[in-house]
Length: 278
Image (cartoon, rainbow, N blue to C red; front, side, top):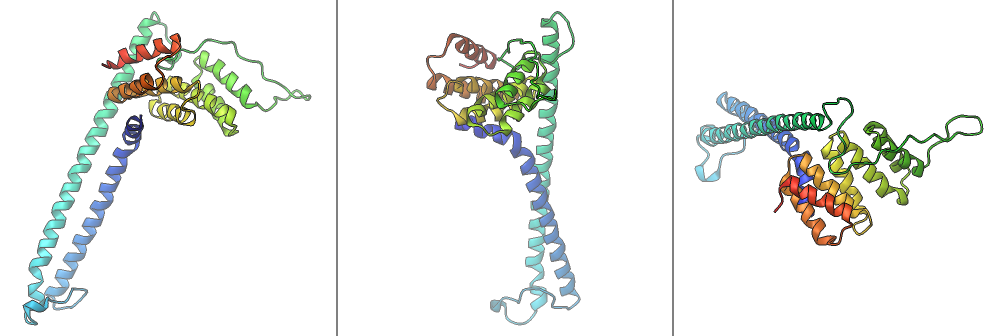
C-alpha cells in the first residue's frame, strides 16, 4: 500500500519538480561558467581578481599561466554538465507531453464508449469509476425564521452532496464535500473524504480523487469504509493508467479485508478485471 501511495505522489509531483530542479542546476552551472571565463579574462589581462593562489608545488613563477589549464578543464566539465541537464529536461518534457496525449486519448475513448453504452444520449458526465451512486431527489434546504437559507450542518452537506452525486452534478457534490470537511468534525471527515473522492473521480480528476480516497483510508484503516476507500484508490490509479499500482492496492484490499460484503466484493472483482490483475 505504501508503495502505491508513494508512486501516486511521484506520478503527480515528481516529474515537474525534477524538471524545475534541472533548470535551476543548469542556470547555476551557466553562472559558474561565466564566472570562470571572467576570471580567465582577468588573468590574461594581468589582473589578480579573485583567482586562487598558485600551488606551492609549482613554485612562484608562471602563476597566472599555470591556472589556465585547470580553469579550462573546469569550464569544459561545467559545459558538459549543462548539456547533460538540458538533455534530461528535454526527455522529461517529452514524457510529460506523451502522458498528456495518452490521457486525452483515454478520456476521449471513455466518453465515446459511455455515450454508446447509453444509447448515444449526450449530456452529463460519466459516473465515478466503479462506484455508481444511487439517484436521489434533491433535498429542500432548511430555512430560518426569516425565510433565509440556514447554514448547512456537515450532515446536511454530505446528504445533499450524495444527492448531487446521484444526479451526476459533480461540482455541487464536490462543493458539499469540501463544506463538510471545512468543519473538521471527526465524525464527518471520512464521509466527506469519500464524497470528495467520488465527485472528483466523476469529474475525471483522478489524481486528486486518489489523494482524497487515500486520505479517507489512512484516517480509518480498519473502519467500515476503508475497503471502499481502497477500491476508489485502485480505480483512480486505473484512471491514471497505472495498472500495476491499481493491482497492488487491490492486493492490499484482499489481504486486509478477505471477507468483503457481496457488493464490495463484486466491485473489487470488477476492478481487478479492468486492471487485468493476476
